[in-house]
Image 1 (cartoon, rainbow, N blue to C red):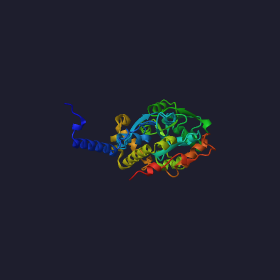
Image 2 (spheres, rainbow, N blue to C red; image 1 turned 30 degrees about the vertical axis):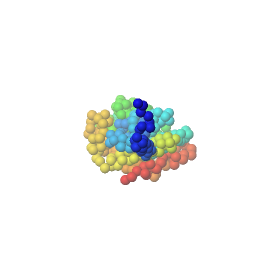
Image 3 (cartoon, helix red, strand yellow; image 1 turned 135 degrees about the vertical axis):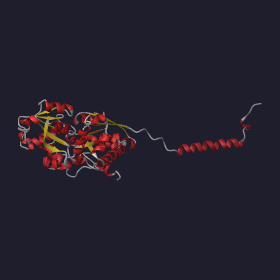
Image 4 (cartoon, rainbow, N blue to C red; image 1 turned 60 degrees about the horizontal axis):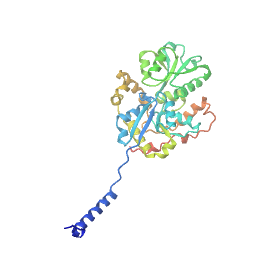
Length: 346
């Protein structure tokens, strides 16, 4: 005997229909699965440099992941290389010096800083111990070879400005790109450069070994104002404006992660911060690293905001010698925004 549909109890039909309806409603009411976080690549002009420490520290503290971000930090020895990677679309952002946003605007490239790490450069103009008697100020660099991380880098901008302010035109000395860290130390010790600009922890290492002396110190606000005439926003996170317009949510999350990191830094000692850092960044001499970090702490902002007088100071420096900037109209409002850091809750 065949079992036709007519033999199936009507009550069962009703139960099945009700069950199907409830499942359909449940599917409609259930939230859609959140898309996997977009992988963001950020180029850092040297992940082990203390001027860029907030990038690595944010990663170590888990603040990117807490924001639902999948961030990969890549390292290049100079900011100019990171800038080129960003313009080519290989990375979404760069942790480098703010002054690149001004230089790029003269080339028709719209780039914005969205978080400021350093209210001052954190750079130090060192003079080799063998040249210290002959070079007592930037007015004495005529005929000398001055080390910078790379031509077109922020160290070259600042070196030229300091020399010009001391009355020495750029044609009266030689800029030699020597990189950073070990290559800079080697150039100084071998006498290939008479003086040079670098950051921590390289500064402390050369001072501790007696291979160099401080000529100009821009690791704090007072020293920077004396050298440059104002605060000089330097290490920062900048992105292309087109990316920013298309990814405001990711930008806001990055801003929150970095502002939380800056707040952490101002609430903890150099020893506590160093304890969070990977061994390869700290190096073999932990005491030296902590000492260098302690000397660097005054340069960091606490809130990621652009200092009020900062952009004008940077523009003044670049306009003094950079032919691409000199005499050009620069719309500083297009080079940074405090929008995202302003939205970070206390």
